[in-house]
Image 1 (spheres, rainbow, N blue to C red):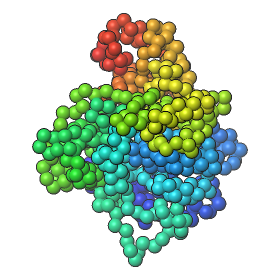
Image 2: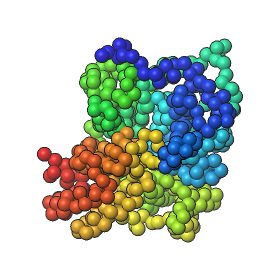
Image 3: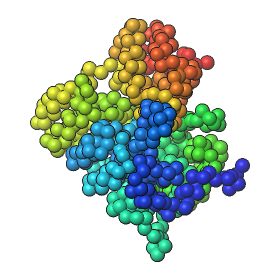
Image 4: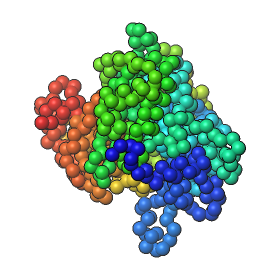
Length: 558
């Protein structure tokens, strides 16, 4: 069925009739209820906010006839993950005073707060605004947070690529003033009849069919998983057109068990674009997606399905029509690709230092009986002129550290129980997980809360089989939406039912290959045992320095 013939989903009408994302949010924020309507939930996403409830308590409260334990997750847009000490301290204050005491780093270099009550949404937004931060565009059918390899930012914080990240974030942000009116200024929904807002043409009245992700990779470091982006940008210098990007399109890793016609897909090289023309080409890609994306089935509304259904050459022709000129052939794509985790100490050309710190599942808080992460980072932000960078691996970099401050920062971290990179095991160092239960409404089962157990089991199994210290890339999610990118991992563990997972194997740190479905509906406690004989074969048949994912794909895939 052609796009124009499909019946639009109800969400499309919500968006179109929302007065550019205002709806009745202003009145619902002060109506005394702990939650919002279904329609308001859809609009809240555009403002970076998800309505949630504590699912650990859901059945008990429902059986008792009580109101569910409602709260909100708020996602702060941090282009490239860069934060000043003042911004970090603002986030720390929100975690303490408004959220559940934690700061969570996402796989897209954003920051999430969990456990925010409805009455805290406006105070949170005002505090963020004071430090030039916002949740607007953190979710919703728009361009999401723009990610970039943190190594680029750390080496050249004022370079052309750092500036491009900020420019892309600004250029493709919605022009609606709804967030400022409703959340920052706290006014009732303003009438826009006298001065209608002019939204971007590629957003229009009902925005994109679904979310859109942009990422900038280092040419030799694919830590952002550039081929999993809707639009990936790989910097390069063209012999005729100078500095610019090879543009990758049509990536995306989420699937839906309820829709067998959904799938993970890696992006394809579309073109090389000079730096000054980047926004124009991305606007043409967005217009193509807006025009041709599926607005009837949100499970199949991502741009990767437009590329797959049309065929790549037909999609390229559609983009070129909207771009208005010929596309340059892409440069060779990352021939010497690798992936850095950016952990530990690094010195940069300006003689300053960077320290990468492992953050388990991205959760920064003061753990009872464990590391006092929030306290340590707060003290560093208070005392030193540094820059914090959230990474796509859910870790935290502290950059621009003066040589004379290294010892003091190391002492602060040690005093608060923050582990050195040398203490990390080969699985722990590369493990990622989404929040899943108890807050995410999409979660089918656990992820973040059971990640440490799975890490320990795999570390022990590697040691038992003569592979102690070998690195193994583990990614775990509570559903197939793929927020922790398990579809390209060496070991991907994806929630299938309340008590089982699908096991994907054979991806790898390079991010250039999809993992293979190895086994369905496996118990979490059986994953390590399932991998044990494969570890034996990896040890005996693997090439020197060959990763598990490369070995599995080479030897064990028919």
